[in-house]
Amino acid sequence: MDKVKALLTNFPEAFARASIEKADDVEIRRYVAELSVLDTLAAVPAKGTSFLELLDPATNSAGYLVLLNAIVNSDLTRLDYMPQLQDAIVGFVSAFRPAQVRYVGRAFKELLAGLVHKGVFSPRITIEILTTAILRLDPTASTFTSTHMLLMKHAAETQSYLPALDIANRNILYFPVAVSSRHNMLGAMGDTSKRDFFLGDDSLSPPVFITTGNGFTDKITSAMILEYNYLRGLIFISQRNWKSAQAALEQVISHPSRDRGVSKIMVEAHQTWILVGLLSEGSTPVTPSYTSTHAKTSFQGLNAAYTEFAKAFSQNNATELKSLYEKHKSLWEEHKNLGLVEEVMKGYQQWQILQLRKAYSNITLGQIWRSTQNAYTGNQLSSEGEVAELIQSMIANGALQAKLETSDDGVTYVSFEERAVVQTEAEYAHEIARCHRNVKQLTAQYKFIGEQLASNDEYVKFVAREQKRADKDGPDPGVGFDSQIEDEDLMTGIVAHG
Image (cartoon, rainbow, N blue to C red; front, side, top):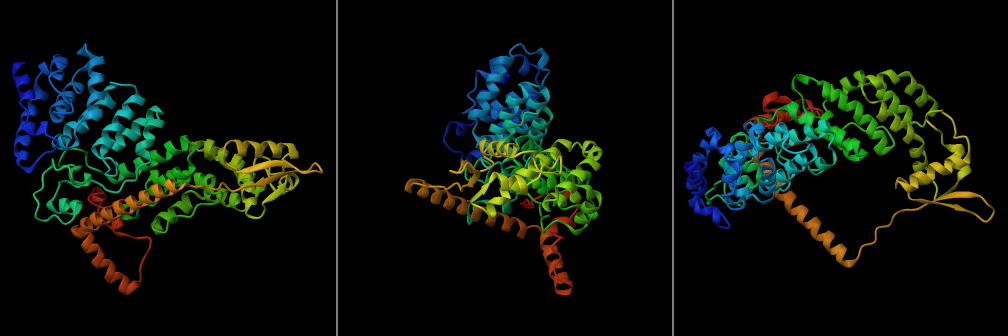
């Protein structure tokens, strides 16, 4: 026990300072190497509270993390201090110093995985903790890791959707490389070729230190990326956020695949993508131009029932829509899409009403009643009163900006209105500043991505091959670099789509 106490408290002086310098790097690595013994000592989980009380997670984040990991991934049934352990975990996640944690990436990944697999907290709190930890390490959460996948899968399995939205809403821009190469660091930090580089440098960009070599993530595979975006889509559907669901599923159906193959999850995502596209846009969604030709052909053949259904919706053919709904009902049930198909059926007449805004600023209930149909019956609603109820519900839930008014002669009509956005001078200045920050951030990301690609041998070879092929045959918009490399290397060091 004394040995463990001495080890934990004999941390580098750099931990007590505001920033870590290059000269501290060797000492920190030595300390971290010595901490590895904690995983093998039975006294650590047995006397965990005594050891945790010795440390401040905001000062010695590395030591505190390794200690927590050793405890959480031990036999928790033997612990008699679970409430104290839970408090310690929450305190650590809220206060750890990212620059220190970069040196103990494996412990970081294992601790978060342990929280999921060991059931230390309820699913909702577990997801909130994982979200907080990811965003503290990488405020943009834009570098994909196996922890992203773990979080999304846990949210879907436990139906704890709300706490997962903060990560689900983030755009993935980078996929981790095996190691932090000198070039990656140069690319992340700009024109700093004369500087020394080390993990504790506060100015490092997350893609530089979030690598498999540093232990922050398991190896990323194509299947993992597909499942992650598919689960994101399902979570957005649970929140009735059709637009975000469509965007997430679009990343699945347009994902590059090996040997022109189309996986089962891509086919299922395409089915769902069509349905949420109808709900989001009111018409059949357009397949992204960068989707491979083979994938498009496969989708057309395998999901013909869905494309036929969407065509009837888009052509305002209520009779055909009703017929197809009934004809393929067993298929919708088999695919577990019946609930979503019924949302489309309910939304059909609402979209007909919304489309009337393009032609009218005011329209009577009678005109709406005569020109729109109910998808379940294939006919008009039974009365103008039912139309009024439908419109009132659309206004109440924010789907329609309009007013129901009555003229002097007793005719009820709908007055469509546009929601005007009026900004104060201060709000306008704030918006300009936000846009400026976004452009600056995107410029840095674009430069980093360009330098990553320029140093990628496979990409350089691909560009040369494509140039020769284009000179001979012309460009093929459905085929790209990602579709020509091995599946296991598909995401290594290459920028994300979308």
